[in-house]
Image (tube, rainbow, N blue to C red):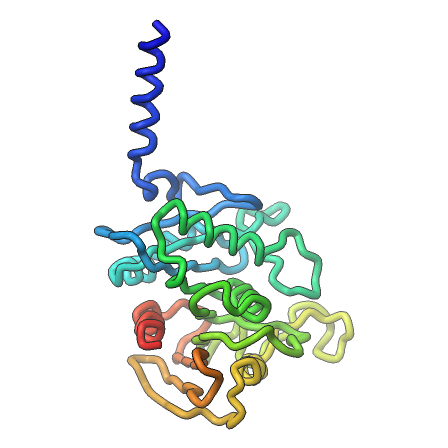
Length: 281
């Protein structure tokens, strides 16, 4: 009887261990790590080690919601990259989640520790290439991307914030050079290029909560990347994206800015444009 039980347990263990990591957690079955959860989708077919894009959702979103953006996700998968989508902590009285992205405001969770934990867990569980993980995000997910890059520039291979970067008060400096592509909509009214006042009378209110200025953010990134010539070195138009890049900077760094005609959206073609940029580094 004991032998039979042991054989059954062994068989169950073999079945459990043979389940591909992609089936262990998904948009319906999140992966749990210290501090929260994430979902992941792997390219098919995939051979380890797999590169990945970790994409941080915007205000009120979720990791599962990121995977429902099939236009973006399918484009990334088609390039052979996994998509990792962590979830922000749920807000009181709301279904969606958010991020404690600004270091000078109350922190509900150490988001940098959480996101790097997701990185490490996903790398181990799913056979990812730890040296080829791009961190990206939309809106305040883009802001979260920027603050993590500023504090821990070597945590990810590159950074690609979209529709969000620093908020006021802007950081005085960042920890070191990064490889960054910032993308923004020319007509973005939710996170305008110059930022906007979200709480308070106007920009003169000492208690106002204000989004940052993207051009000021780029100046901070130029300083971090030691781009002392200030002006861009290259200009290009790729589909709807008008791009400018700074090349005469610290070795191993990269800085590029892409504008598109639309508003506060993830534009069609962004995933391929971003991965073309990353693979050319």
